[in-house]
Length: 322
Image 1: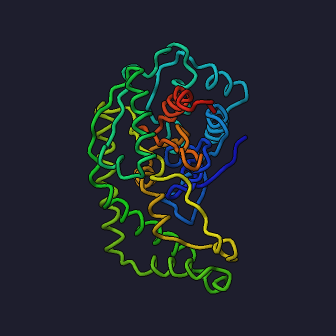
Image 2: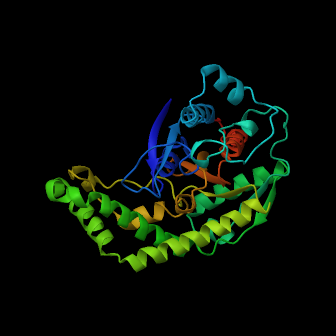
């Protein structure tokens, strides 16, 4: 089973993580679509019940923008076991051709051996103990398979979160401006406040946010292009799914809990602001509630095949598998 979603600040990866399913946010514009709501942040992606389902759905949708024949798709995507990897931007709109080389390859039985996994430890440990312990357990699994754990520094993340807030609220408020007059009575008060907040930012503040974004992208390029790491690993969320209060269930429009929302977004914003692909998958269950705890891994632009392969290799982390 698969479903489509749009991720401008974790709207695929967060619910996937909390529900224990697979959530893939591809490289920005890898799955082509038009969004006026948050045009520089929104990513079209996939919710799925398994890594295989997510990979197949991703490959089909990404390939549609290049309009192949069915035979060409089957030949190049599902049987390309020994073709060389390519980061060249040969596809339309400067996108490289879609491929799943590392995911489908049978030539690398010890795929995790030598894999360079970047971990920003201070950020990883900014989560509940059960999440931190599950994440460290996953790291030890990768280490036992021969992966290399490399310390990295993403000290700009706090500033990047602020830049994301300025960017997404500004873009959403601009889109909604022409609709507020006709539909404001249909919107919850919290939504109207958020849109008003977005309209309050100045052009100078928006530009400052984009400068922070540019810096973050340069840091990501340095990590991946200079062969420092193959993936970045972190928890998907800092806690399992929070309990919904009884009184919230009676509200017609629900509740906008900005503190809780910001907390759940702690690990995912990096991917939206830099456009790198990320996948979440379950690695453990909380001992008290039985709710899933998930991992987030992110790779260089256009390297979704790496993410699918690592997620597939990590299926054994769950006692009963997926």
